[in-house]
Amino acid sequence: MTQLQRLVITHDQCSGQQIQLTAEQQHYLCRVLRLHAGDRFIAMDGKGWWLAVLSEDERQAEVLKPIAANTELSMSVNLLIALPKTGMDDIVRQTTELGVSRIVPIISQRTVLKPSPQKRERWQRIAQEAAEQSERQIIPEVLSPQSWTEALSQWNAASSICYLCEARGEYPHLLTCLMGSREWGVGSGSREGGVRLDASEPSAQPVQLPAVTIAIGTEGGWTEAEVNEAIAAGYQPVSLGARILRAVTAPVVAMSLVASTIEARV
Image 1 (cartoon, rainbow, N blue to C red):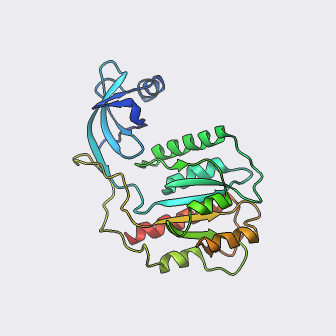
Image 2: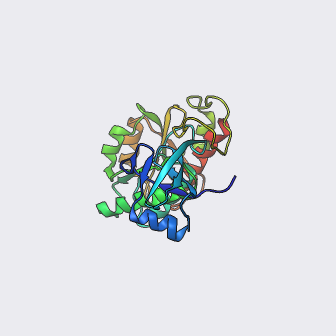
Image 3: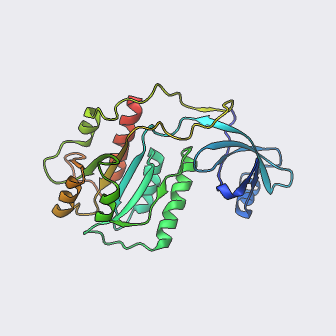
C-alpha cells in the first residue's frame, strides 16, 4: 500500500464529509508535500484516522472512509513529570512516540522551571507533531502544570495503577512490578498491526483496561514528604535500576518499560 501523508485536523473543520483546510494546511499539502486535487491523505482528528481526498480547489478535502488501525496501547498511560530544568520538549516528543496518553507537568518542591502558558501550548504542538510522525491515532494531551498535592488528588489508586519512580531507596524495579501485576496483565484478544482501509468503523480508542500512572521526579528526585504523599495516595515506589538517570532519561526508560510490557501481554 502506498504510504500516505498524515494531517491533524480539528473537529470544527469538519462539516459532514467535508474538511475545510486552513491556509497553513493548504500550504503544507500543496506546496510542501506537492499534493494535487484528487490526491489522498490521512486526516487525524485526535481520536481516529480518516482517508481523505483533496478537492479540486485544494481548499477543502472530502472524507472517504474511516481507517481502522492498531497503533495505540491497549491501556491509557498517564505520565506525571516533575518539570526538569531543561529537556521537557524531548520528554514530550519521545514519550509520545512510545505511546503515552496524557502528560501532566508537576510543580514539585525541587522544580526550578516555572513555565508560561505558551510553554504548554508549545508542548502540545510537539505532541501533535510526534503523534503524526509516529503514526499514532491519538494525540496525547499535555495538561497545565499542577502542584504535587493537586495532581495526587486526581491521579491516584482510585483511578489507575500508580508507580512512583524514585532513585534512592530499596524499592523493587518497575519492570518486576509490571511483570508481576495481575490487575492488567491480559488484553481482550490478539492484535494485528498495520492499517486497514476496508473497515467500516475506526478503532482509535484503546481497549478499556485499567489505566497506569507513572510519576517521575525532577533533578534531585522527590522529597521524603512527596514520597510519603504518593504512598498515601496508593503509589508503589519503584526503581529504574542501580544507576542514577537524568531527569530527561528516566521518563523515557519508564515509558519504554510500560509500553513494552503492555504490548508483550496483548
